Amino acid sequence: MSTYHFRWQQALAALPQMLDGAAVTVGIALLSMAVGLVLAVALTLARTSGNRLAGGLAAGWVEVARNTPALFQIYMAHFGLGAFGLHLTPVAALLCGIAFNNAGYLAENFRGALKAIPDTQTRAARSLGMSSFQAFRLIVMPQMLRIAFLPTTNQMVWAILMTSLGVTVGMNSDLAGVTQDLNARSFRTFEFFAIAAVIYYLITKAVTLAARLVAWRLFKS
Image (cartoon, rainbow, N blue to C red; front, side, top):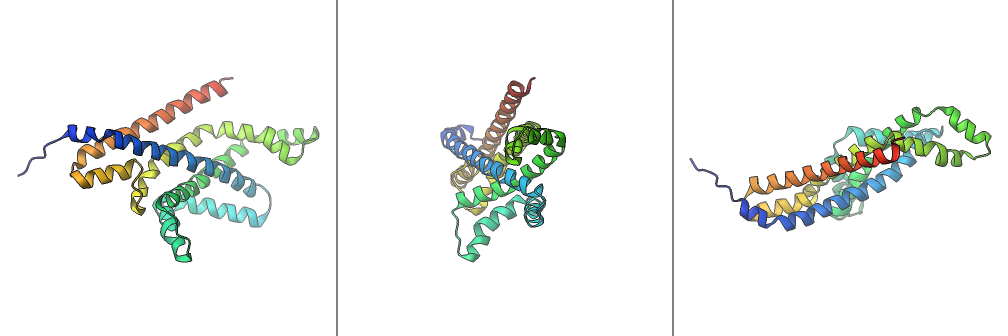
């Protein structure tokens, strides 16, 4: 019976490469969140607009994003769109897949937050001469974002973890991709993936703690 010999020194020597991959992971997650937030606001407005076509399309987006695997969404961006002649790079496919997923979940969070805001606030803003758009932008949206802030933080954590699915479409510059390449060259599976798991954990904990600090500073009143 063979015994596995740990070689942590060899794995730790590759830590700078893994940290570079971690920076790519965070960058993709942040960009996907930025795109997802913009799309989520648009989806929320469409679902609450009263327009049946816009509301139906937005509701369909949310249903697909929330009820199909994130891996499926990334595959559709990379392989599915290729069937129509649109070939995305692994980075672009990963970004599109995660942003699509983020938009669906965030739109539902925002819709729930909107329901918590009394309609009287919009009516009061309109009585002061504001347009519907001004009332939403200046009165409703700040409250909506405040209520949905912590759920949005959870989605950011999920986006960071979803970037690891990029290896399935050939992504090799993020943390999961770098770790996979290092493992393929050295076969030190436990060491490399254990270190990667610790890095993922530290990143997500840092995001969570930073969000709590921001929430305390912004919403302590």
